[in-house]
Image (cartoon, rainbow, N blue to C red):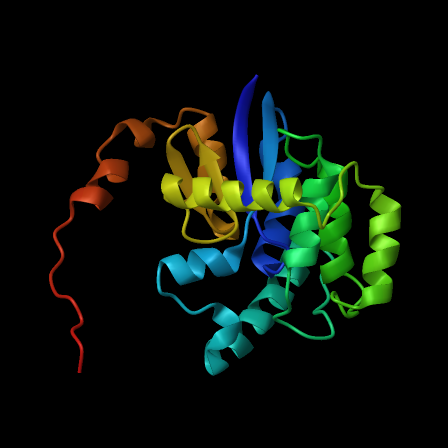
Length: 215
């Protein structure tokens, strides 16, 4: 059985939709998925990027598009009461549900995504977080150093691997970014001949025509 990695942060609606669609995409294939929570904000900082919700017009478009995609894919999704929010408590809770050295299971990830993206409630509300923690019954202390270290190491490993956004699916040494890359993931897993051609490697060798300089 082949194992692939699904890198995500529950702050991302695209990751939430990709998570829900993943079983359909992988149906009929012998694939195990490692769900790897990472800090999206750390990726943005490392690459000197702003997130979609930090750019006013892009923010509006992001929310419109994910609601459309929810409708198109028939996957329930509601915008939370406020966004963006601090996802660290949720990320740490996810790692706390896993045994040391392992990643969280699908049930825990599903529960956290739906906590954020179904119902239109405040993802950071302390009372809701307490209820969520009780429901997931973590094996480790979410505020403990081992959990914090697991999250840091997972994020650092993702960065070293070349991950720049969420969701990202890793198939061996190939990275597939975004909800719209899931069909490409399926093709790769099915040994589509395209992946043996020049298309994949050509992207890494295309010369840079111009770089933006400081004004």
